[in-house]
Length: 174
Image (cartoon, rainbow, N blue to C red):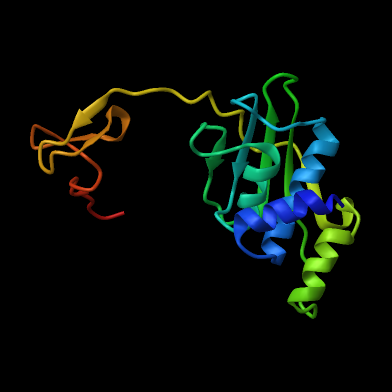
């Protein structure tokens, strides 16, 4: 384990915890399986199925961020990360295996950081295709609140262009 890199992750995240360890080891697995390196643009994409601590390690170790558009949130709640390498076309889904409940927080973190990757994670192909590269959208001004939002996040309501905050959802039945 690269102690310097672990400390960098802890510094970014704010504390050491089992969740951060999951992300750290998921990155190690992706690096091992796909031969990845830090992403300076969108050559590497991570689709995270959770919004937990481990995502911070993905940002630090592999350079996947929401701002660059190469960190995509897919809210299944599963402790899974799908990594795509645009250069090679390779991909892998890294899913945390169940960890024995009788472990306390310290033992759980130690297990995650020290056990063989195959004991900690299940590996498969991602269940969805590589997301397209990030796009730029024109900003449209909401006709109710006056705030701007990208055109793909706007709605038409009563003949007005409205943002998601001002849009009144209409649903009946099912």
